[in-house]
Image (tube, rainbow, N blue to C red; front, side, top):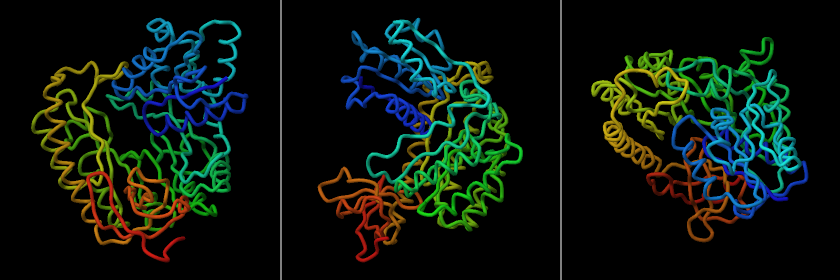
Length: 437
C-alpha cells in the first residue's frame, strides 16, 4: 500500500509530515511518487491564515477517488474535527495536532472497519513530540527538529493556542539525541522549531533553558549551522542575543515577527511589546552581530488600523531595513478575540495597504541583495539549481539563496562563493578555487 503526504503551511507542518512518514514507513507502507498514485492520501494543514484552510477542501475535491483513503491532520483538522467529514464525505479520518503518533493505528482501524475516525484530543505529556524522523535514505543537508509546541500568549488574532495547545517543551535529552542522530547521518544544519522557541524549557522546571540548549547543540560535532524559528520579541532575551556573537554554529540570521509598527495596534493585538522595545532588540542584535540578516512577519488591516497606524508600519520597514519580510492581510480566525472586534477593515483597503507595503519591501530586499555583490560568502550546498546544467544551489549563513556553477559532489559541503549579482530572491555567485570545507 502506497501513501502520499501533501503539506500546506509552515515549517512545523513540514517536520510533522516527515514524522508521520517515518511512522508509516515503519509500518510497512511505501511512498507514492504523486498524490494520484497513492492508496492513502494524507493532507497536513495550517489554519493560522484562511488560504491554506481553503486549499484543503479544494485539494480533497480534486483527488478523491474510489478506493482511496483520505486523511486530514494538523491545525485545520484540530479546528474542524467531525465537521470535516460532514462537509466532505471523501474524508475518512481526521487527526488533530497532538495525535500524530496514532496515524498508523487509526489508518488500520479505518481500513479494517470501513468506518470514519476523528481524533482531536490533547495529551499530557504530548506523545507526538517524541516521534523521530525516518533514517535518511539519501544525502540531506538540513533538517528540522521540533523542540516545543503550542503557545501561552493568546495574541488576539492568533488561533495557535486553540489548535496547538499550551506550551510544551520536549525533554532536552530527546532533542539532543535527535540532533546527534542527524549529525551522524550527515546533516550539517539544524533548524529548531517551536511557536515561541525563546520560551523553551520554561514548562519543564529543572531542564535546560533555550540558551543552554543552544550551547549544548553547538558542542555536537559535525553540526556546522543552527537556526531557529520562531522567536517572539517579548521573549527574546539578552542571553540568547549574546549567543549570536559567541557560538560558531549560530547562523547570522533571525526571524523576529513584529506584526505592526504602531503601538496602538500592538496593544490591541496583545503582543506584549512596544515599537521601541522591538527596535531595541534589533539594535542589540546588530551590535552583537553586525552581519545578521533580519526577517519578520507583518500584518496589515488589523481591526481598527488607521492610515496613521499603517504609516508607522511602513516607517518601521524603512528604519529596520529587513532582508526578507512575510506580509499578510488580517483574516479573522475562529475563537480569537480580534474576530469580534469592531471596525473591521474592508478587504479592498487591506489589499491596497498590502500592495503598498510589499512594493516598499521589494525595493529594500533588492537593495540588500545587491549590497552582497563583491563579498565572499560561505555557502552550504544543498542541491542542483533550477538554473542550467552544472549550476548548484546553496545558502549563506545569513540565509540567502546562492546559485553558482559547480559539480554535484559539492552537496553537503561548505564552500566560499564570491557574489557577482544580486536579484530579488537570490544571488548569483562564482566559486572561489580551493575554498571547499
